[in-house]
Amino acid sequence: ETGVTQSPTHLIKTRGQQVTLRCSSQSGHNTVSWYQQALGQGPQFIFQYYREEENGRGNFPPRFSGLQFPNYSSELNVNALELDDSALYLCASSLESGTSGNEQYFGPGTRLTVT
Amino acid sequence: EDQVTQSPEALRLQEGESSSLNCSYTVSGLRGLFWYRQDPGKGPEFLFTLYSAGEEKEKERLKATLTKKESFLHITAPKPEDSATYLCAFSDNFNKFYFGSGTKLNVKP
Image 1 (cartoon, one colour):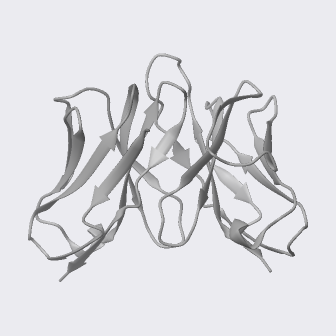
Image 2 (cartoon, rainbow over the protein chains, first blue to last red):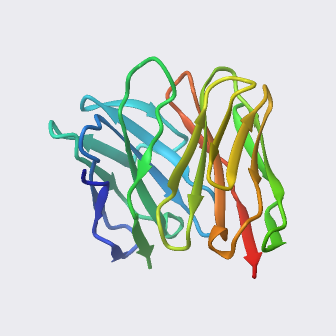
């Protein structure tokens, strides 16, 4: 069984640029969620994708957008980067059954630094 | 407003000294309450899911319990390798997930 993988591991971008982060879900999982984790804080929910559609969204502006592909992998896109976007970005996959809370399995994260 | 609060922020224990971590939550419709362990520089590692008040789950030295407003993670006779940040989270009926800031546990030999 393959776990959740993310790429790249680290990334440095300049304020105003755009970035794309990638995630491959655990085999057998159909749902992907993205989180932003600042140093010393808990993960903040960005959004969730189920069957290639956004299925839930946290309090993040529209410049945070995503995609889910037919193989359940996913991308997180962030436009017009700001210094405060510097954080660890986590991807989590789960098997959505629609009937109960779905436990999520996390990848190792992508460390984004905006200068 | 849905939210989750964890206490204490940090906890230092001697090896073998049992204790409990607290997670207080406010949610309009709970789908699941989750506990995770996170080591520095890594993604959270899933520990438990609890669905309803009164439910309990155990794994090695860890036991998670749930009431209508709180969840506790009990650590019995901890070892140094239990040192990590423990995160509590819940999902609501709108498919939103809320994480606490975590409790940083340090177990000294």
